[in-house]
Every structure is written in C-alpha cells, then in structure tokens.
Image 1 (cartoon, helix red, strand yellow):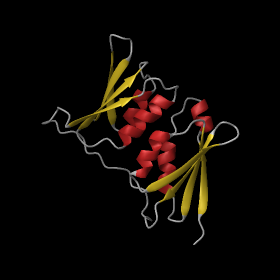
Image 2: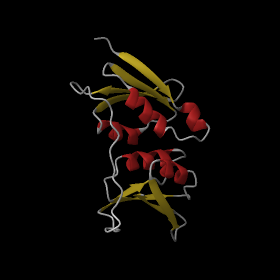
Image 3: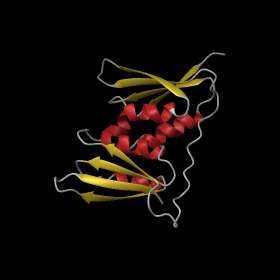
Image 4: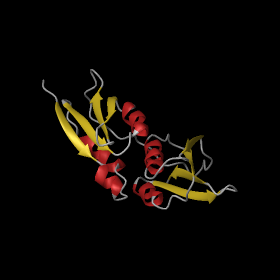
Length: 170
C-alpha cells in the first residue's frame, strides 16, 4: 500500500495571530490509514509531539532552508485507527477541588508559542484536573480559544508582574 502525504502549512495562520491547533487536530482526524501529515511551521512545535504521540503518531522534524520547520507525522507501525480526540467529562459540581494540578511554564517563549504550549497541554488534560499556566503576559487571545474547547480560564497577576492562568473544563 503506497503512502500519501497530506501537507498542512500553518505559517500564515501564525503570522496573522491565528491559533492553528484546531486546524492541526482537524487534519489529523481526517487522515486515512495510509496517509502521513507534513506540517510546515515557523518554529519546531515540540509540545505537539507529545499530543500526537499519545494518539499513536511518531514524528520527524527538520529545519528547512527558509528557517521554518517541516514535521512529518506518521502512525506507528500497526496503528491504523483514526484519531479520536480525548474525551474530557466536565468536573463534578460535588468536587470543585481539582483532582490533579498540572503546571505549564510558558515563560521565556515568543508568541504564539505560549498559547500553542498551553492549548496542547489542555488537549490532554485529565478529567477533573486543573492546568496552571505560568506566563509573562496576560493571555488575552487564549480565553476565546479555551472557550471554544470547553474550558474556562482566569488569570492572576503575580508580584513579579507575571501571570498564572488557572484552566479547568467547564
């Protein structure tokens, strides 16, 4: 069986301030068993590697001559099931305390990398858990992305001027 390569270029999305995470997940969901995903990005999307790794994908990444990155996602041998997004039931009102707290440090990253890192962590957030994202700026563009994915977040400024955003499933 020959393999087909589907190309997804997210460079323009990122240049225009649009978050491509949903676009990437949509492309992965549409992949047929004999297809690979070739993604072009302005930076190496390392947090995405673990997200897709948990879904049975391996990756090969390389920086290309333009300074951009090319990543080839391939299903692991014998894994031909289609991508199924993780199911995250809402937290129980009877248990308002998080069952687990996951810290994500997105400080020191250039935009849009903090948002990418946080959204990739949210994609695999266990039910009942809370993600605490540490950032240098208030994540104004993040809130709409969380809302679209069924999450709520609130940010608190810290004494050093950084922010911690607490994120939970609605």
